Image (cartoon, rainbow over the protein chains, first blue to last red):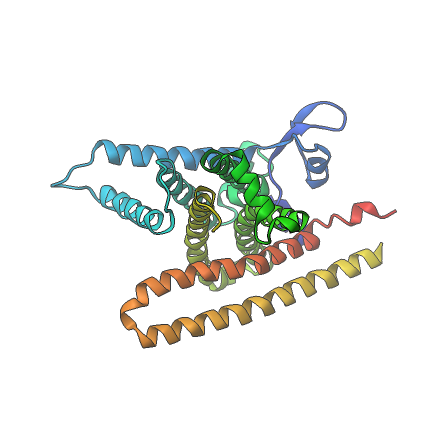
Amino acid sequence: MAAATPAEYISHHIQNLTFGQHADGTWGVAHGAKEAAEMGFIALNLDTMFWSLLTGILFCYLFRVVARDASIDKPSRWQLCVEMVVEMVAGSVRDAFHGRNALIAPLALTIFVWIFLMNLMDLVPVDFIPFVSHLVGIEYMKMVPTTDVNATFGMSLSIFGLMVYYGIKVKGFGGFFGELAFHPFGKAFLPINLVLETVSMLAKPLSLSLRLFGNMFAGELVFVLIAALIPFWLQWALSVPWAIFHILVITLQAYIFMMLTIVYLGQSHESHD
Amino acid sequence: MESVVAFSALAAGIMIGLGALGAGVGIGILGSKFLEGAARQPELVPMLQARMFLMLGLTDAVPIIAIAFAALLMFANPFLGQVG
């Protein structure tokens, strides 16, 4: 698939495989950014769905196999690896979460490993999988689900839902809304309190998802730019250092998402004071 | 139409530049405090390093969001469709 100009190559590589209803009423895959935008809100990004489900199933399967075959005297290497990750997550939860909830640690583990695996797809060279998928007839393929705002917002809105749910469950309706209305200033400043607290509450899922999206999108965009603008014999000179730096960014972003989830859920379990 | 494109290019440049400025100063201060703390108490370095990376990711977040929006302006400008 040879694009005529670098700009075309770049816009081709940042376009998702969007499935939805065309302007004329038929259902199908979009053939361009404009068509994808015309499909509206209910359009589905098939490549995001596929890769996020694949990495999620891989994570569940891997951890299940290790748990099932776990042995104390002769641990396999995968078991040691999984144990390291679980210990790290358990330590973080123990440090940051001061309530009693059996959901938090598995949730944190899932968030960390799943986001890490999804981000890890970014290290696969830009054209490898789109080339293969183009041979099969699929026009667009973005392998990194977390470069799609839909994926990151899906995760952060679920966390937001959990925050509100646990806030109401632990503090009661009155306690939850009381915290929104009476902090940080006293009861006299109710409207100001409400505005401040609502904005800060809404900023949490927004920043959570956009942080992950921004980091991953910028990283993928740099890879695409290197692929588009540098001749093939110079590719290694730039993409290898960026990939090495990106390994740090991938792990860091997954860790930050996990830590902030733990902290936000901890905040909804304990009172403001 | 041309002015929309011109102003979008300018906006993208300003967003990335100011974001880089903020990120650079913030992370510089963060790193210097970390080194100071590490020099005072070398036994705390692992814990301090973990917290420093956490803070680094948080400080980097908004400048990188700005870069993502600047990239959006460069490659899929939403303002173009509103003109004419």
